Length: 186
Image (tube, rainbow, N blue to C red; front, side, top):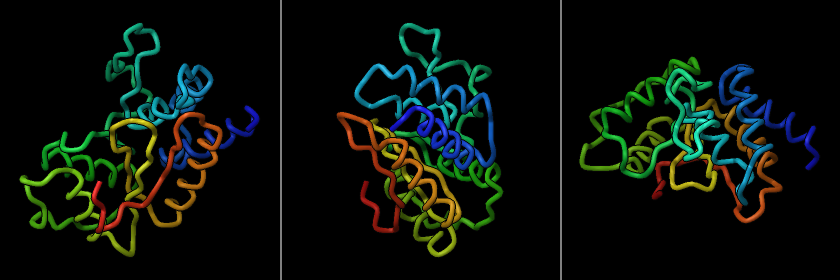
């Protein structure tokens, strides 16, 4: 893929994921792709930028940048979390942030969730509750984390297509995007 085309796809993907163009976030994502030092082509770094967990480009150890240096408010549009990491209260907080950021309106029957479960079960339950109106989209970007967001169905199809285009030339790992359903098992 030529660099100009990849930049255009990245810009469209970032704009869709962030519910509008945010130049600082786009430029940080572009730098991640241009400076990729591994076989994943910078894709995991792009997803971390979009989730508000960008690595500090000046830190030789690759630590997460301070909150004030993040181009996106953490946990606002896209969630990056590993299996079992958040508590249920945090999971609901993530969902509320996505709803606010993206202007989404849907009820969540919190009684149907259990503290004894983990994010896999919570995502499956939420997917069942959202069935028909919204999709939970996961972007598998070569990390152990779930990188997911909630989108209107028409936006989710476009986001998955753009992600596929963005990652088409990634060598060493096949990045995918998929809709999480009520049958999700992790």
